[in-house]
Each structure stands twice: as C-alpha cells, then as structure tokens.
Length: 405
Image 1: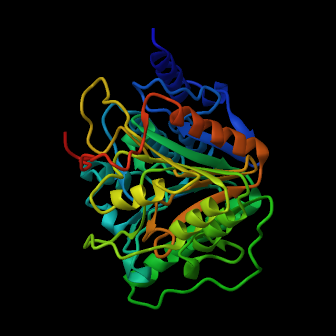
Image 2: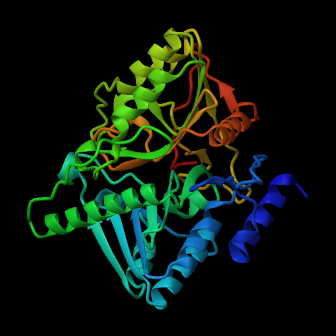
C-alpha cells in the first residue's frame, strides 16, 4: 500500500472516528492545520487535516457558530458531506449558526449546497455584496465557535479544499485573536444588514494601535478593520522589509497586477516592490506558485522577477486524481510565508491587487521559531519534491484551464 493511500485512510479515520487521536503541530493558541491532496506523495502526518478539525469545532460548539466564506460547494460522499452533517447536528441541538457568504460567490457555489445550508435548523444565512463597501469581495475563509475558538486559512467551504487541494490554515484558541476575528465577523454581519435596509454601513470604532509582537491578526480592507487589527497591506511589505536572510513563499497566484472583473489588471506594485527590495539587499527569495499562475498577463511578471539575483521561482503542478479530472482542483492553494526561521504568515490572500487593498481577507502573523520551521518544512517538501519545476524565463507555458480538462 502506498504512503499516500495510508495517509488517506488515516485521514478519513480521523474524520469519521476520533479527530483527537490525530497527531498535531501547535504553539500556544495556534494549531497548524493542513490538507494533503489525495493521490500525491506529499506527507504531513504530524498535522491534522482540515475536515477533522472543522468537525471537532462543530461538535464542541455550545451556543454559537459564525462562518464567513467566499462560496460553498459540497459533493456526495465527500469529507465535506460529513462536515455539513456535523454542522446540521449542531443546529439541531440548538446552536445558533450565522453563515455569511459573498454575493459574487453565489455563482461559484453549488445550488444544492446552499439549499442544504439554508435548511439547517437555527441557521441564519446572509449574502453580502462586499463590492458595495470597498469594490472587493469576501475572500476570507474563516469561522468562530462560541467566541472562544476560530479557524482561518486558505480552505474554502468546498469539498475539494478538504481532499484535492493543497491548503494550510490555523485553529486558533488565543483569546485576543479569536476576539478580533469575532469582531470582524460582527462588523461584516452588521454591514450586510445595513445594506439590506439601505442604511449607512457603520465603520468600526477607533482603538488601540495594532501590536506587532508575538502572534497577531492583520486584515483587509483597513477601513473596515476592528480596533487593534492591523492592515495586512501595510504589514506584508513591512515584514518583507525586515527580512535578513531568507523568505519562502507559497501561493496560488502572484503578480503585480490588480484582479478585476474586466481582467484589465492595472499595475499593483506594493508587494512586488518589497520583494525586489529584499532581493536587492541580499535576501534569498524562494517563491512557489501554482500552475494556474501562467496566463499571458501574469507570466511575464513572474519571469521578470525570476531573472533577478537571489530570486528563485518554481511552478507546482499536482497530478490528476485517480478518479479522473476534477475541475478547479488538484492545485496548491496555501497562502504562506516564512522569514528567517523566525516568522510565519498564514493567510487567505493571493498576492495580487484586489486582495490586500479592497477585499475582506484575514492573515495571521506568528513570531515563533517553531511555527516558522514547520511552515518552512511544508514549503521545502513541495520545493524539493516531484511536482515543482523551476521557472525558465525562455520557456513558453500553457495557459491555465483550471475548470477544463
């Protein structure tokens, strides 16, 4: 039996039987959670898989579950199918559930999944057109349980994110950060109600200056951040500016362009300038992106970065699943960064314009050697493995077709 099959069996056993029996990697207040795509040789046996953690959170809920998501998609017989069963069980035992979905995510969602969610007892379902607030979307993927635990990560509320996509997130019990995540959900929930009633959307109150020590939350867009939550668009280049030796980044998508519905992609240099400045002062940059990052607009910018001294870029292509082609799957989707073996970044944003500037996204910064080492090891496993290939600036690359065979 292959390693990947053994891991698959162990993962499903953890989901269906005892999530607590799974090994985990954590620092006080934060547990690293990971989706290992099935039918790969990747291995993260010390990390619990996402489905098991979500089930544990839903099973432990006593009074309230709040969920903020871009879209929702289930598939019969999937791990997500089991996750929703446990969410249904929570509603049936009286737990109040609030589910907030991005309006633009409706067309990405499965209609049957939305219908199933709306039918859960004690669940209130709302759709927020975030573009009316800032021009962006709810791209964050997060949940809060009883105001005491939270989950933030790259994992969409999508069956593929629990089995067929490389994803990384955090289960959070740190009281300060959980409280801030709760405040973000409450802010957006109130915004939806205000827009629905054609009333002004309340802005968060001003508060204390955000901390930059220990482990802390940053978010976007800054205008709608609760007190004490830093601006991710400011924090990311600031962290890159503090790097001394090495930065390792894993993303679905990278380019100094702004994502928009018209696909014109105006120039967005905030992150790109910071990366180039770090490389110029001698910092080793190892950037790993998905094979969806090779369209005709983004690829030239990747190549222009790859020719710089101290910069290496690799493109990751995951193999097709044994069951055959799955649209919008079989890809790396984690949004992580590790700096100098000292700092770890786990977030929900791709590194393009339209994410850190005007969309709702959440990122966690951990100034922890232990977490930085483990995030770095996840990066290294892919970087040195069979699925990553160095970007060659003279090569042509096929246009990505994530939804087509």
